[in-house]
Image 1 (spheres, rainbow, N blue to C red):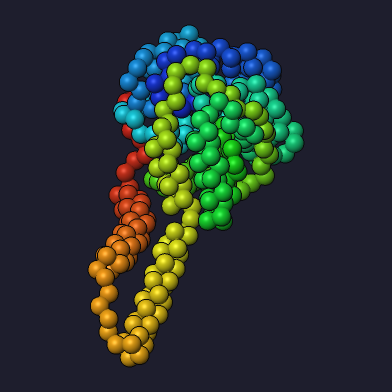
Image 2: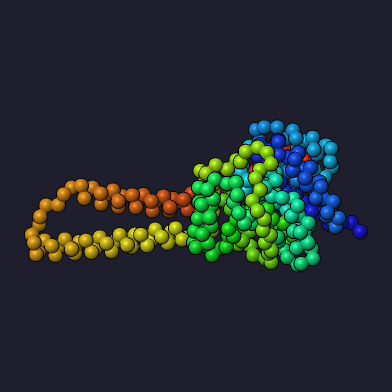
Length: 311
C-alpha cells in the first residue's frame, strides 16, 4: 500500500546558511515518521544570496526536495500561499528554515491529525526568551488589541508553524485575497485544531528579516484585514467632537449673555485647532488604509511570480 505524503513547506529569504542545517535536522526526524513519505518544498522568496544555489544542489542530491523561486521578494505571506498551492501531500506543514520551528514536533503533530482526529495542529511559543524586551512587549500588546477588535481569535505566541490535512489546505487556498494575514486566516477558517506549546528557540544561523518597523506594518495589516473596529472608532471620535463642539457653543453663548464677550487668548485657540486637525488627519488615515486595501484587491494582481521551479 502506497504511503500518504507529508509536504514540508519552507519559505526562505536569504537563508543560505540555515537551509543545509534545517535539511539535516529534518532528515533525522524523518525516521520517526514511518507512516508517511516526506517531501520538502522550499519557496525562495527572491533571495539575493546563494539560497537558490543551495536549493538546486539539494534537489539534485535528493529527489524529494523541490523548490519554487520567485522573480523578486513578494513577502512571506505570498511564499506561504505558493507553498500551499504547490504542495502535493495529503498533509502539509509550514515551517521556517531557521529552526525556530523545531522539526522534532512533527511526529506529535502528525499523530494529532492521523490518530486524534484533528484537522490542524498549530504551535505557539510560551516564552519569548532571547527577544528584545521592547519587541516582546509590543507583540503581546498586538495580540491583546487584535483579539479585542476582531471576532477572529489570534492566539498569543502563535507561529506560522502548522500542520494541516488537505481539507484545511483547500480552505486556506479558497481565501484568495491579495492582502493576506495568515495568523488571522488560520483562525478564521475554524476546523478542529490542537495547539502545541514550546519554549522560544533562537535562530540557528543568519539574521532575522523582521525589523521592528516591518513587524509594526504587518500588525497594522492584520488589524485592517480582520477588523472594522478602527472605522467604528473613527465614527465615535467624530461623534464625540461634534458633541464637544455643541457644548462649547452653548457655553460661549451663555457666557456672552451673562458676562459679555471678553477676548480670549490665541494660544489656546491654536492648540484646539491643531488637536482637531490632528484627529481629522488620523481619521482620514484610518479610512485611507481600508480604501488602499480595497484598491489593491480590485487590481487582481497575482500574489507572486515564479522565475524557476523544480517540482
